[in-house]
Length: 171
Image (cartoon, rainbow, N blue to C red; front, side, top):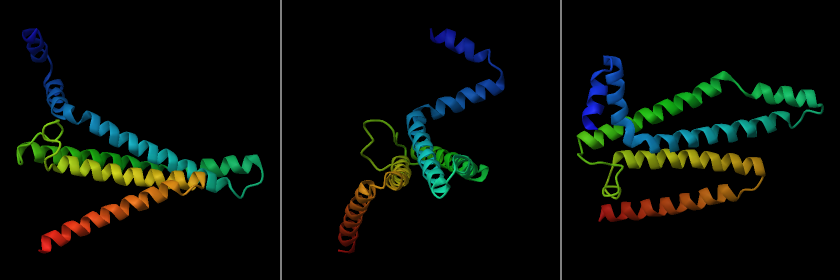
């Protein structure tokens, strides 16, 4: 079976071989990249939905509301989301390479998930930023501040934890 796979790889053109190597390198990051992209998509959807509702709020006729909602979607805003997506994924790849080749750890396996990893830290921070944005959008859409309260409580706990760690470092 292995010989068959090697023969298939050897038969590929050099661009296909290069693509296969890059894909094999990025394979461990697939689920992480999927989560980040999904969070960005949900954030974009909730943001657009909120902006559409705001734009249509003061309009009286159905035609005016529809036109106001459609005008909310702008290519610049969508481009910004795509840029964010590209650079988040790029940074995850760079940090993964650093963890793998400089720190000599496998950041995404079960054994080293509890060790310090720039990949894991950056993934958590990116996810927190996006989930905070989603929570804020949902709170605005529903008019229920429960999600903003959850974010505020989490922020207080994180600040408290950071204060404790700073106090320990000073001693």
